[in-house]
Each structure stands twice: as structure tokens, then as C-alpha cells.
Image (cartoon, rainbow, N blue to C red; front, top):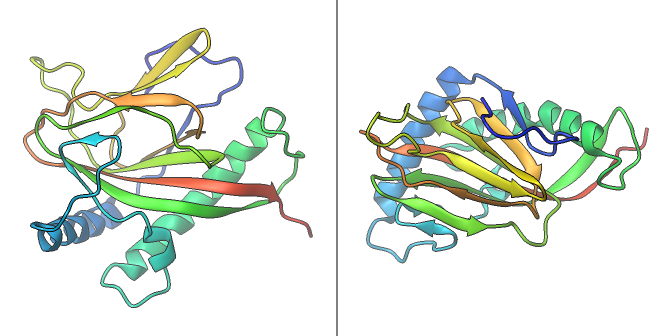
Length: 203
């Protein structure tokens, strides 16, 4: 998956969650949501072109929304990878080693990339760990070999990924990253999120 330099401690980790049927359901909901929001002011952050939902998806879990159950399943699928990630990086993050951790979501949002859209270099301030989960992607075409590639920069090197559907990437929120312009035949859909207050879950 990664084609860049290896980090001494794997501060960027990828997990293959699958979620094939769930991804199809989420894709339908995301495109319907985007269609409903057309004509309203866009969320504009690092995204240049494309579309982002509001950043409160984590707060909608448990509410009466059309995609509540799908979101609940998706966030549930993140729990074990996040615990594995924190355990692997706990020393670097000044967190005690443990079998169980807890955290708070401080933002979660859908990203839909259309042809030519990209994400400028950015970090995720005021958070500890960030994640990107991929719902729909396409293999890059020969004429656009970097299409949709996500690049991370750290002291002494860089890592890059061509995520497939069902991939979850976890990384420090302070790590600079960007996404190359996307040139696929359909939309590229992902969900991004931020975590803070990561701590040992006491028995």
C-alpha cells in the first residue's frame, strides 16, 4: 500500500476493514446528501473543488438520520484499529501502554472528490490523531499516475498511499499531508475524522 520511506515508528498506519456492503450503502447516502446540499454554501477547508459535508457526523450517530445505522456500523469498525494504533504509538504520544483506550471524536465529515479536485497541504490542529476512511476510490489512469494519491511529510522523509475502498489510514494530527488532484470516471468518496482526549480506559 505504501510506496514511500518507512518510519522508525509506524506513525502512519493503514488497516484494511473491507466493509464492502456498508461502503455501497454509504456511497448512496453521501451522494444523496451532496445533491441535497447543492446550491448552499460549501464547506471550504483544505479541499480545492469537490464537496465536504458538515464536520459533525460523529454527533449524528444515535440521531434519527437516514444513514444513522450505517454511521454507527462504520464508527464501530474503527474502534479496534484505533486501539491498535494508540498501543503501537503510545510511547511517542506520552500515553501509558494498555489493552484498552478511550477517546473523543472532535470532528468527522464526508469528502467527495470530483475530477480535478484536490486537498492542499494541511494538518488537523487541536487534535491528537486523525483518520481517513475510503468508501469509493479508483485506480489511477496511466495518464494521471498520481490521481488521488495522499502524501504525508515528516522529518527525514515522506510516505504516500493509493488507498482502496475499505482502507482506514491513521496518523498524527500534526503531520503535514495533501491529496493529489483526482482524475477518475466517478467520485472518490472518503470520511475524515479527528480524535482528542486519547487516554487509557481504566478497568
